[in-house]
Length: 467
Image 1 (cartoon, rainbow, N blue to C red):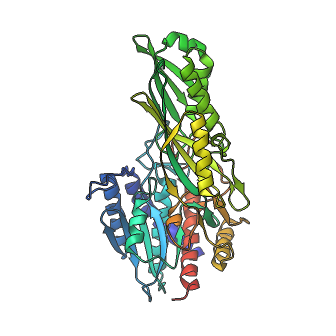
Image 2 (image 1 turned 120 degrees about the vertical axis):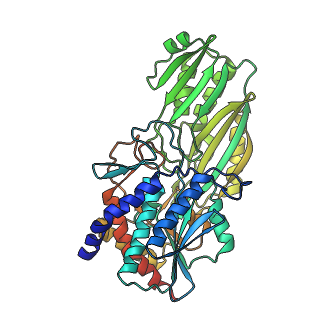
Image 3 (image 1 turned 180 degrees about the vertical axis):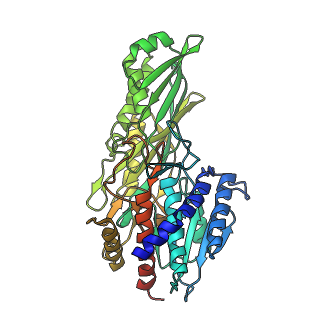
């Protein structure tokens, strides 16, 4: 362990240089299926090439497939593979940043920037773990690959493309969750629902949220209501009213963002805005009903509002959030992001949601997602990986099931494996610093633990499965 710690210390400045480069690339995935050269946008292609520069420098093979993903290849004695799956795309920055989102800012042993924690920092820690193993003479039994996707935060078309063109690994680790081992993921359902605004509506425009899988941190609306009257009627300090001219106003609400899979502790800016406008008593009845319906649907996070308060012993409670919403051509568009329990019956669930939305004036225009993922808890490698993580952390954590969606759900025999540390302190408190929040960061401690755990775990997985 001393040798490992010294190697990491000696190479950490080099790690930071590589980290700085990939964080500087604004690789927000933008789907453009008609663009074969840049199917997810130019920055996503740029980050794949930046990763290639790093892994080739360490002597690994690397290829980019149709600008959909990059793949590190470390040939082993067998062509059968052990997979490591990371993603280099990020969610949009959103409002509220104190530090530049696409510059790596070092502050008190934390590193701030969009993607530092989700998922560029963990991906780079895995690269350096592979480098360490290679430089210290490890000879893999299986061929070890590391996948670098650029559409994970959207529809995961990158991993679906990979799965069609490559055999499934014998076993895969996804460093995009928390330690010790995530052996199951809830199903994901994303719904787009529409509702006609009333003829007398005072809503000119409406915009809330930046991504389906994030609780909105900002909501804003332009309204046919006098700014002075509206400002006097709203008592919520989280809502600001500005004069938009010609007797109209613009209202802006600020909430607390969070990942849709872990919404506890967040505050939806859309809910804050709807509640404030409703309480003003200045709007026509058709708008007040809309505000009431928004609150009815999204005031809770565990499915009650949309008619599916599901819970099971394997995966806990279903969660749901109103991801983003907007108004165009007299129609209110609402996105809903749902993480449903492993034992849920899909047809029964979607029927209940449809009926509930209909009762609130919404019709479902589109629904898509992915089924739950579950690996048998009794698989011995799960206990081995758990033991390695707990030894490094000095904790007694148990394997778990989560609501987050990672590449594991598109693979066979895949588990989430760090680098999150349950109970770790929040440097900025609950409103900033986590994945999908402003001022996202990762600590040096977390990177160091992740590096050492991956160095120990990769050979264990490689040797566990027969060649």
